[in-house]
Length: 126
Image (cartoon, rainbow, N blue to C red; front, side):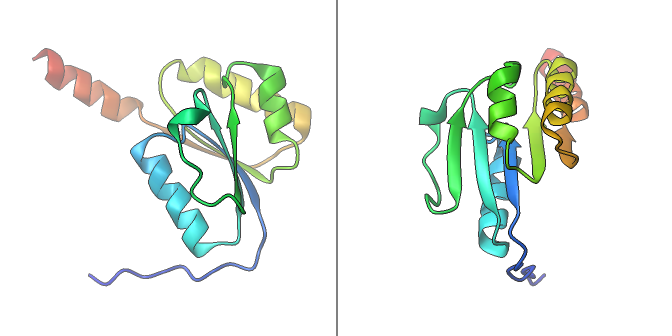
């Protein structure tokens, strides 16, 4: 099957990403950088774990998604939030939505991995 590129979008979007060390998020970052003109802010607990893939278009912020002041500061000037998290997802989602309300952000892409984690845990304990 031939891969099809989306074509570079002229639309300049600012996107804030959470959970950026995961495999899906790293792939998503590469696609955003390859196929769009988006400016990305990658939000990580330990920023030193990730090299900056494109310093002209990517800003890396260190913080905890449960820390509302840091979250709100990172959301200022963004157009969309991309969250690909695991762990205490209910609390993380609540914090993200609360910060979005506080900053006026209205677009959220939230990737939930509960089903895959449940399958993994079931096979690991069998």
